[in-house]
Length: 342
Image (tube, rainbow, N blue to C red):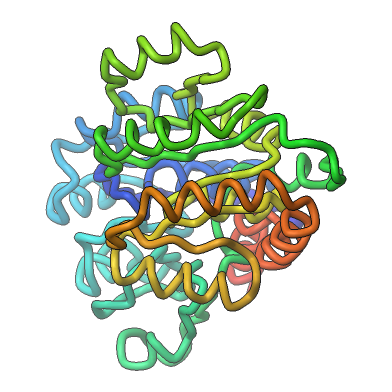
């Protein structure tokens, strides 16, 4: 990995959605840049301060009153930095140009739905292509698309190499929930899965802000097979020991792919359906749609298939692992450092 002494400013939305967690993925990129010798600063808003204390306790912070374009640009104008990384769906071309000035900018994007500044555009969507940005960016901008640029902790790449696919019975099922997963849906899926577990464990990755309802905590207290996790830094270790993953479309899905897990992927939105359909065409997941009237029975059948068929688990896991190797943060950091050295 190349080394740098450059200073990087992170401008991040404090809003978390089901498909994107700007703070978590930006701090992963910050760590990759710090590993190369870079000095990183993040503009901290009242909505991000608490999470930053967990995700990046040692990172330098510059306080802002809000995550509005006006406040973020004002604070940035008081700082010295060599490049800016922006992960904020509420900022467009004008704010990007103000924040970057003559410096390189990296824009982490998910939608390709507005004009963008920046010298590097990153969109890890499965079916996203550079052509989607043709009229939205400068011709000279570098567009990085596809799951190979999905941002995840570096531990995934290391743990992936330690995993062994074999025909042993399933011992651990992973259920990855996200910020927008309704509590009633979470309970439905857990109730659907538990009767099929046998002696296996069900490990549930909860979002940090997820307020575990009392009935879920009571189930976990009565059923030792149900284990609840909410600390973000523990995610790689917990996911890596799973034999099967069940995930909505979002960060947890790409993490499971990087580990080569056989996956049941659940689509919630039309954009999700494009992703799960594309993954299913690649024989990388069993795809389900939450909008299906018989979703519960489809989930049950998909789980039974995976539990009973080690050859299917091997095929799905092998194809999923081909999509991303967990080193997206390093690739983006390398590209930015290379740009700065020109």
